[in-house]
Structures are given as C-alpha cells and as structure tokens.
Image (cartoon, rainbow, N blue to C red):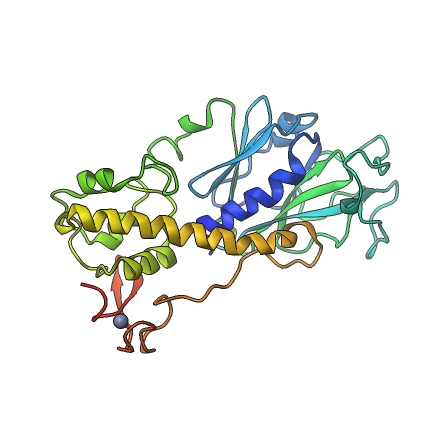
Length: 317
Ligand SMILES: [Zn+2]
C-alpha cells in the first residue's frame, strides 16, 4: 500500500512535470473507485491549467484554478506520466510514438483538433493512443497539453478521484485531519497533551488520522522500535521525554523513506509500468521470528486493531 513517503515522492515526481500545463481532456474508463469519479470532470477540467500539486495526508491536491482535483492511491494505486498521440483512426495495436518526455513542454507534438470527450466506456477513447496502450486497471487519464498524459492505475480500486471547488481543507475527507507529521504543529507537547487520559495503545494513537496523519503501519512499527517504545503501551502513560523521542523518530523515519524514494523519481516518468514504490530495510516490520538487528532477540508479532505489530521485547519498553 502506498504510504505517506510514496505519496510524497509521487507528488514531487509529478509536480515537476505538471505544473503550468493545461488539461486538454479527461478519460474515465472505469469510474467505480472507492467513490464514483464525478461524471462531469471532463467538462470541469478541459482547458484548466495545473497551478500546483500539493499533498495533505495521503491525498494529492491538484490545484486547477477553478477547483481542486483530489487524488488518493488507495491500496494499490499508482500514477504515471506517459506519451500519447491523437489519431484520426481508431487505435489498433501498439502505436509507434516518440517520447515527448524527452522534449520541452512546448514540443511540437500537438494533437489534432477534435480531441475525444471523456469516455465512460471500459475502452480506450477512440482517438487517443498512448504508449503503452491503457490496460485493464488503467481507470483514469488526464490528457495534457504537452503530448503526455497522467494515468491512474489501480487494480484494487480503493483509490479516489474527486473534485472540490472550494478550499480543499474544507472537503469532508480533509476537514477533521490531524497535523502533518513533518510539520511543526506535530511536536512533543502536542503528542503529550493529545494522549493524556488515553488507554488506547500508543501505536493505535499514532496511526489515528485525527491525531497525526500519514503514519501507516510500517512507519508506526519502525518509529516505535527506534524510539524504544512498546507498541501496546497505553498512550496516556507516555512521558514527555518519550513523546519527544517518538516524535523525532516518526519524523526521521518518514524523512529517510522520502529521501530514499527520491532515487526512484524516474519511475513516474517512464513507460515501464512499475509503480514508484520502493523497498526499504526494516528494523522490525515484517520480521517476526527474525533476530532483532540491535540485540538479536527474536522479533515478536501481535495484532492491534486488526493490524500486525512487530517489536523487540528487549529493546522496547
Ligand atoms: Zn532488540
């Protein structure tokens, strides 16, 4: 599942390519994602310029001037930039197209007049030929002015493509979210105050989006190990110094993952079809029964709130 670092890397990779481009058209092949893709998106987006691409929690927020396109990658989503050509004839087979990604944004590959309208069918829009052609799980394309498109692939369809015409912070999905883990609102005093009187485990607390966003299961496990805190400890029992340590380790764990993912930026602008997720070496996550990398004791695994927790019984108190 894409966690916050993957979403942030996706944002950085895409923002560099998208900002300032205009949207020529929208293709919806399968609008049945976690929520339906609004059917009027082609009308809303045609001709809009992409002002910026920001992130809030794991939502990507594409400012299109008249509103914001809200994208979520769900369990299995990825976004890629691909070259396309417009053709007068229906697409057949794999077309031979140049790679506009290697050109400047104002390249000469200008699609002919008469672009396809948003397609509600399960097929490729008839005049659009991308390289590679859209596959079964490629549900949504944004056709851009420079001969490229942004394609959402989401095999499990838990992702989302939504539109909000007001301030994105007021969207119901975003309005009640807690602070960003890498921003200054999330500090030791905040974590200390918000956990007082809480008997729920500290791991469930830091995974609660109302307390802090974007700390998924992997990073919660890893941060707690690095902070020496047992995942099942009642949140209300965490002292202020231990809150300081935990906040620092959550920030460091996420920042390191983002930096590591920086080397995979090219994955968002090629045609390999590989999502830009990256593999890391973990201290505890997914390592049940294996020796702790610090003390050699076997890593334990328990269930907390339906999620697997991994920890070292010696290093974490
Ligand atoms: Zn250990």
